[in-house]
Image (cartoon, rainbow, N blue to C red; front, side):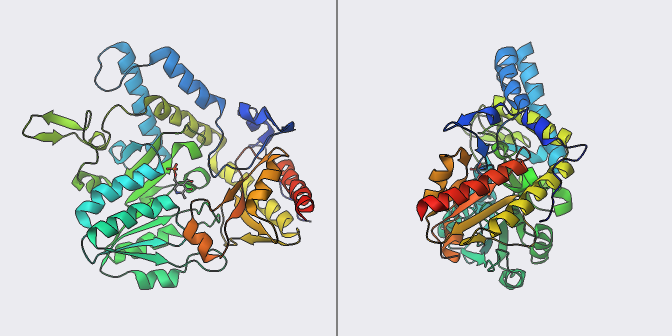
Length: 414
Ligand code: PLP
């Protein structure tokens, strides 16, 4: 058997677990084994405390107030924007727009840039492994504009066919919208190469970073993507806050999204002039508390170290994959050469939902179903999968519990 190192001197998973109070709870009288991190990650105390500190210490609306609380809240909110800029290596804070999450970021681009730049006969390319959030907004846009939605096929092992992608790119392609890490397969797509190819064809690229932001080093300048969207709740931060990065020149040219307070410079009944970036896209009172707490989540990741986290997660994935492959009747869906730390599988003669319920009875939380990727499930001719997704606080012992739990479950179902 291969041995996998869990603990390096700089990374003590057991110490890290202490920072996540929820990991100490029991489920069905068993210690919780939380393997649904791709749906949402758990939150460290520093994030929970940041929320508490805001509401107990300096709750105020931002930007317009001149009193102390308003100034403190504004400073914390803008410090979070700076932390995000650093986290993804954007060129400027003006390129960081706070949203509700990945879904809202993608919709913002579809409703603004899309409606301005996509016309009848134009083409948008997505891939066969997109989350519904990166399919439906483009479908709505294409229907409205009589544009064409094209799809990069997925190979049997769960990778994108880059040859087919090259063939799909034409001078009609206006946008390529692709996921960097698949939430259903774990595949890490070669987005840097794909972006370069799209740019050569004259198209812009939006990267869905919902799953990648937590696992990979993100450098939007090195990737040269035009847009990058991710969600706070998948990077150990709160729900209800997300980020849309856009290149400054593109954001400057785009029409506004929602109208309201904060996004304006001057309003008369006849005419409105709009605010500067990034406020132009942040109408109304934003989600102040959760945005402030997002910084605590990013600080937590930075302090722990992305390289160390990745090493630990790669170890978990390799160990889990090896153990799962030994289970008779189990097929892993998605065997890409490069994967993030999640594994999707089906077991002959069983339904994913039954497995999920029986694992939950043993305190083990996994996700079952189509993972908001119905076309991908159709591609593999399956109703859904069981998905175990690992985070920095998961342990090899938890992988062992999953494997033991699966053996028990299979016995119960047979
Ligand atoms: N894209 C991918 C790849 C995802 O995994 C998800 C969520 O699971 C989303 C988009 C949507 O994210 P949110 O629901 O946080 O907007």
